[in-house]
Length: 96
Image (tube, rainbow, N blue to C red; front, side, top):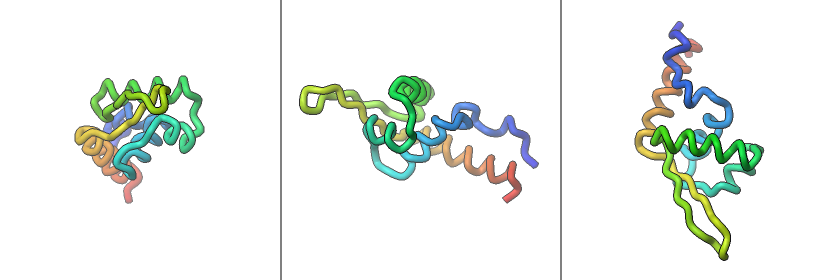
């Protein structure tokens, strides 16, 4: 069994893992899509997105749409690598 410390603590948090999982499936996603899919509050989602951005796991693009702020997130190459490594480590830990 692999030790738990092999699991990236940044990705091990439930909401951040959900965000990354969603972004692995789509080219990019806007804030409202991520909020709808994760059922997270705006504040909590914003904090978790910023943590992923600070780690360079995702790119955050801020713009305006119909005169309203519009935030779009896109997984970075580093984020893809970190996610895939996390999944492999989890599989080792679970012995599957």
